[in-house]
Structure formats: structure tokens, C-alpha cells
Image (cartoon, rainbow, N blue to C red; front, side, top):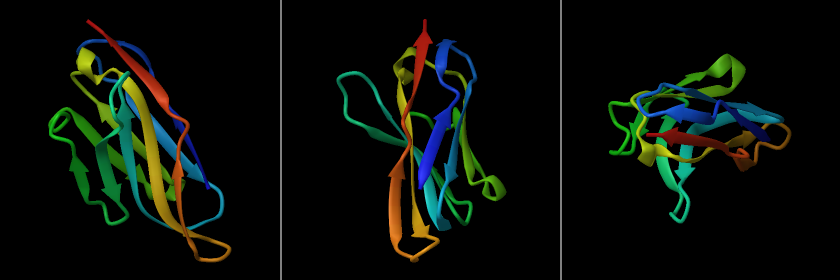
Length: 120
């Protein structure tokens, strides 16, 4: 299973970019897709997660500014980021877990990361 993340780049403070994460490969089912981020010199942290049932959860630092949504037909999840702050600067990674198609065994996969740099 592969994850392809896109949508990062240089953004001004207050900007509203949208990240995408597309899952492909031998997928029977997906339990949830999450966005994590890692700022320079800091640990990776969970930003937002959406389950197959549509439930969402957010880190306190992004509540009210970020929205995670999914397109199940495309196995794609989006992270709409609004009112960006310089402290949102980080590499954003998507992660998903579920069951593989060919053997119904569980999998977990990370995307390659996309860098978001917020200028003040």
C-alpha cells in the first residue's frame, strides 16, 4: 500500500493551503487516515485523523483552523489548513492502516511527507 501526499509549499501566514493524501495498492479496507507533522527539532505529532465512519479528531493546536475530510471512492484524504501560523511550519505526513486485499492482513503505511513552510 502506498500513500502519496501533496499540496505543501511556501505559504504566507494566514494562508489556506490544502494537503492531499492518496492511498493506492492492494487495499481491502481502511480503518482511518491521519495527518501527522514534524517540525525541525521536534517530535512528530498527530494533527488530525478521520475514521472510515467519518469521525474526526484534531490536535488542540489546530482545532477550528484545520479540517480533515475524505473521499472514500478515491481513497483520498484532504487536510484543509486555514489561518496558518509560522508555528505550523513542518513536514506533514499522512498515515493509514487497514486490511490488505490479497490476504486480509493488517497494514500500516506512511506517506513520504510534504513540507509546509509558513512565512510571517
